Length: 331
Ligand SMILES: [Ca+2]
Image (tube, rainbow, N blue to C red):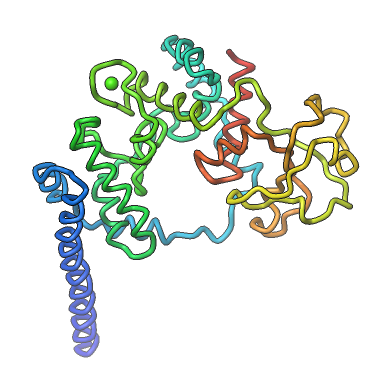
């Protein structure tokens, strides 16, 4: 018994000293980050007020390292995210906020798409995240894995606070630093967010500012109103492997629709201009154990690829477009 107690004591001393070392070097990192922020032209007052409150969040590193061992198949993924209750919530949100029509016209982005994105990202503001974003970004900047990316995001965030574009007291969001109804990262806020209700501050938890910001973002990256997103297809067995895209990082082997005619069983149902360039995705292939190689399969269009810019996930974009279609039937 005595030996076990001693061993436990040694164990706790080691664990304690490791976490102390981590915290010490985090505070060293804060000091060097502050110097960098000053060089970027951010005021000392903002840097000190904000960064003195930043703490190291071990949980954020846990989330960052977490790699699911297997993915939900596409059907499960979509059915969990496109639900009747979500459709109902979205419809009533729209009916109570008809300013969304004005935003649809102004930015040439369908209201159904905006509702779908908000529904998938945060379930209409229900899941905005409770992490202190400054501390999340600081933790991920201090960590070696993606330090450069998150350091830049944190600098941008400090600039937004420094020039009073956003209110630092509202900065609670996802563990990776995404914020507001549509989960914008600081760079997206800086490039695309808008103060639509004209009170001199961008509030991404406010409906007007967040809807206009999302619409402006989509418009600026080239969204084409009333153009298709994806079309579900049944593939013939003889389709060459190279045409089956499984990664959202780079979509390969695009062809005009008619080129794929010989590989698609339900080709005659495709009521879309045959000269549009498309690609084929098979999102379950490779990442879902025992997935059938050729099913499900989709033809994807330019608008679909724009949603990948918003979030690089084949399933995310499928879910958004599916929910969008549901809203189209309801509104
Ligand atoms: Ca505002």
